[in-house]
Image 1 (cartoon, rainbow, N blue to C red):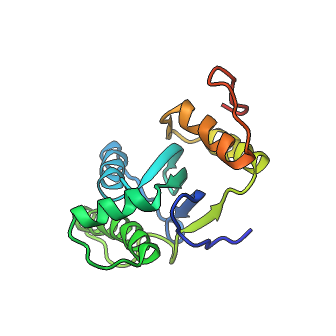
Image 2: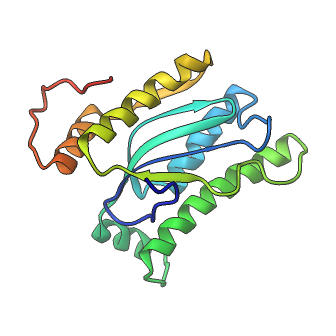
Image 3: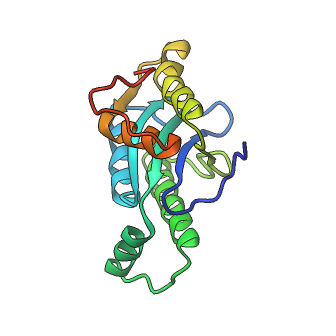
Length: 178
């Protein structure tokens, strides 16, 4: 599976990145909160299913909103360009740059905070989706980190399973791995 899949409307993706070298992305509780604030500011173009933040890396399970929702969003913020893939990519870039600049300023550091390019893998089948959900939930425990872990909405996860598998699961059905 390609670690640099295209960012296209309605794609369900696992995206992740880590700090350069042995550095940490989060040195205080405020860093975690600021990261999530910036995520919310720049990445309202995605639905977030679950995520975990660890001191030196993070994982998110998301789906990019529909083409119609994206066009509405970008027209509201006065983006004239209509290459959605490029606009989506720019939103991710702005998110990472915003966090990095603030982090560098607070800790008087220079240079790149993150590895070169964040990785993202498209979720194309129900089993892989379940594996990613399980991994995001259990990765922090294996590393023995104090982390932030969140499922934003179990119904969104069930809808993603339904969309990917073509089935229609009951909303009361448990989601494996959560």
